[in-house]
Amino acid sequence: MLPGIGDWLAASWADYRRRWLSLMTVLAAGGLATAAVVFLPLLPAGLAAYFGAGSPWVIWSAASLVSLLAGLWLSAWTQAAAVRAAGNDEGAGDALRLSWSQTPAFAWVLSLAMLAAGGGFVLLIVPGLILSALLLFAPFYQLAGEDQGLGALELSFARVKPVLGAVAARFLLAGLIAWIPCWIPYVGWLLGPLWAPFGLTACARLASDLRTLSPSPERPSLGLAVGALSLVFVAALLAGSWGAARGASALYSSYVSGRLALQAPDAQTAQALLATLQRRGTDEDVQRSMTYLLALSSAAAGAP
Image (cartoon, rainbow, N blue to C red; front, side, top):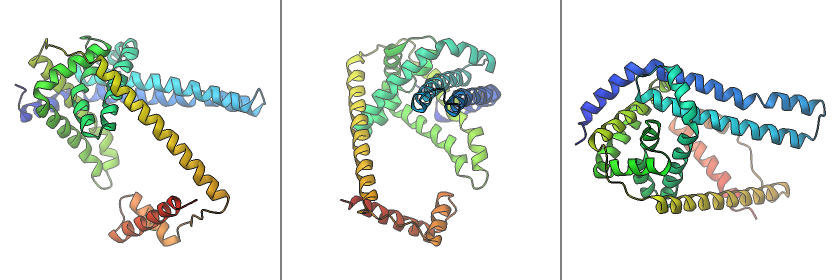
């Protein structure tokens, strides 16, 4: 059996305290590196466009593509290093260095898990929640060197399935504990980022407990299921994007032709919207904001 919830939380807290500095250093360094590689390609692109070195469309498209690819790579590297730092007693430098070569495999495992879970969410939410719990630990096992790709997903599935209820309860509890400080008035925005990594540390501890419970479980074959769920998710994503693009185009056409009149909020409504977004609005502010948004939605829905 898995350790009790109290024992699991106590062990997670001990891990978090011991690894906090390393984990936060990894997140800070990786975040800064990711931001740098995202924005740096835009500087030469701006200079090239300013001096007329070529077509602005080509210049900015190339710069945006480089920025996107570099950002995705550094973001995956940061996530891999954070998972290593949360699950191992190694310094930030070691976590960043060792995870660099593991980044492609980590990104592949994470993509497979997200595609499969996304397909489950398309199938009426509940299957997505179940699949999220079943496949959650695949990246942890990939970084630990136990398996790669689809094999890591199958390993996570096999270890979680016999104790799915207990794992799901712990997963939700870890998320709730990590999220609570964000709702503290005035200081939540500061405490939240410092406390949020506890959820990752708790998941790393749970992955370790599952490994101890089932070192070599009998694995199912998930290739067909993961492929089918991925297709479902991609098809839904493409259909949603196409529908949104058509809807936006129709609304724009109605607006420029004068058939759709969207009224700007008055001063009192604008203040109510701002207060509601800042989470300091009264019930009257919330009601006024909702009335305005519903009016906009009705006008857009009724546009020719």
